[in-house]
Length: 321
Image 1 (cartoon, rainbow, N blue to C red):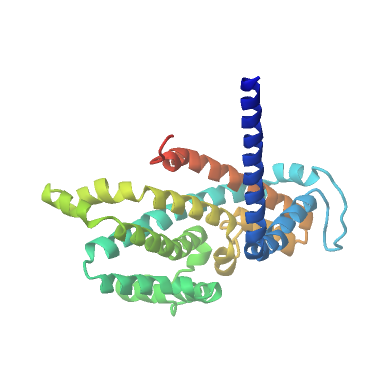
Image 2: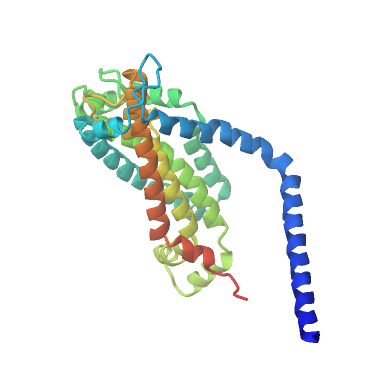
């Protein structure tokens, strides 16, 4: 009988503790609601609802009449047989891979140069500020600068330089090399974000590691390889995933500089969706292209998290009880 009463008492106390925990969580949620409420409203209005509408629209034949004509999987089947979509997919892969290497790789080089090799911090910050200027300017201004730099006449800056130095005739760079142009334009401006993130990470490394490596006779290359890079695993993972998803879904610089031309040679998947929706007024087909793009981006993000060992990084340093 006494054993039964003890078990019952334990059960009652456990139930009370569970009820108290639930009440605390319930109260904490309502306490936090005034703070997170406005952000939740923004996310629902400008992210969740548009996603739902885009998915729904992808199953319709909506055109300039803006009528919701249900067509089932017709848009997705049309995409499978779209010859231009294959070219656009290849262009997107080239654009994302090469630009990503520039964004992350060159950003890392800039960070190491300004945060490690340049010992005077003010000089490094000045260089970083100058490099960040194009990113702080509107995209239209940045694109206009590239159009002026690559002007096909002899008055274009690049043609003038090559003409004066090597006697080369004027060349229409955007017409003959559209994909390299958009890759370089996006890569240089994208490297600025990597430069800032990697520089902050390098400066957060304790000085004791650099001193110990120097005492052991390590060269600058050894320090970068065995001290800097291991400490930057998190930032490198973040920047790689962030820039990949950004490149897969962005198209503004391509739209402003080449508009996907000539003959779709610089057309990427996101821009193809834009052209189909707002150029050809095939809103349903454009929505289907966007849905496929989002699905691909999610798969890429999951694969990258697996490749970088996200779970291991998250669990590292945790104390098991």
